[in-house]
Image (cartoon, rainbow, N blue to C red; front, side):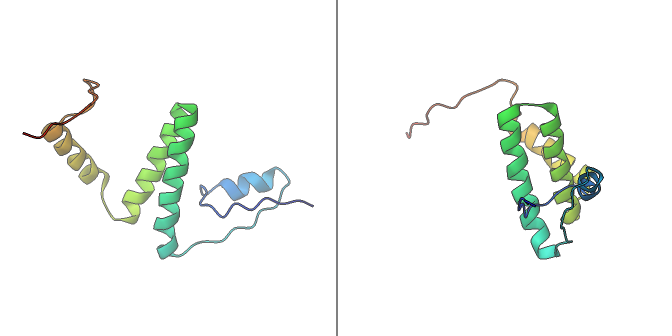
Length: 106
């Protein structure tokens, strides 16, 4: 019997989904200290998957991880949106598609 080692954070229903296929999985809850570390790893994983696929589903996964990080840090979504809007108003967005090529001193 072969197995694959993952050691990564997964969505809550993944063990049930795996078991429903007739496979067996080993999992455990992780500590608060590990949780943020694993969320950050998951964010990088999902960004990489989006860069490879460009799909809406991967963008949704990035959003889900962001929501989990905000919840872990006790940051309400409206606070996140407020900060995002402030940055948008102060520095702009990306609608003009500007590529900064160089900055010269003096």
